[in-house]
Image (cartoon, rainbow, N blue to C red):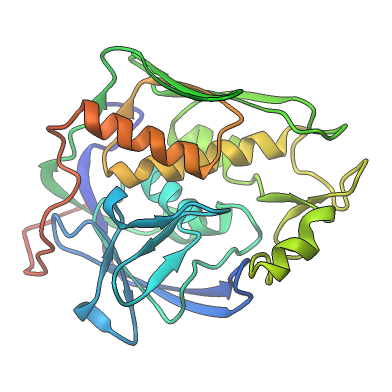
Length: 298
């Protein structure tokens, strides 16, 4: 068993309830996380439709990558899933049902720490089936101008990330971490989503950031932070969290070293599709089966 990932397929033992505000919609959202059977996958259901119209977390469900990852089907959509998916990836949760009354995942404090705290002390079920990882065998890369993502073979999953903005504080930020549960909780989970004060009006006119505030985002003026950062390089740490949530759409752990520069959800998604194309034999989702299977309690 790889020490960085719990490779058996995994679900939760009991339901978990939470609620919060959507950063883009501004709506109050209630959610329940429910145990699922093996090979259910990560599935979102809306209370209005129930199990008649589930949305599976997979690349095939991605409908938009503007400012967040949006998953959809022909009836509804769920937005801003990347923080939640990054937690599932790190904890090894492969099968779970998320019931919601809204179209967005709550932002909480802008980080994924409140989400991981919901699960970290809960009991889980392990299935006997292994969620076989994708092992990067040869270098894979994608380039778009001065933005790029590279994946290299490595026995230890890790990521190095650089961001650069035309801003005195964010002219260059860099971070490098092993991708593991302990490192994620200590170094990544507390990093909040960030944005620029000058963009707020435009975003809200475009139906984004309507629920954003200094309580759930790190905001930068033209020369400084409007609220206190949790790390000197909090912004790039948050980008690492987003990246982990984006690659979680593949549904499998990835053993490799990622080198990322100035990426975002759109480039991340293009990179995901490239990995799937190269490793075309990977299983990215089975038909949803809600009949109970034998589970191992841990």
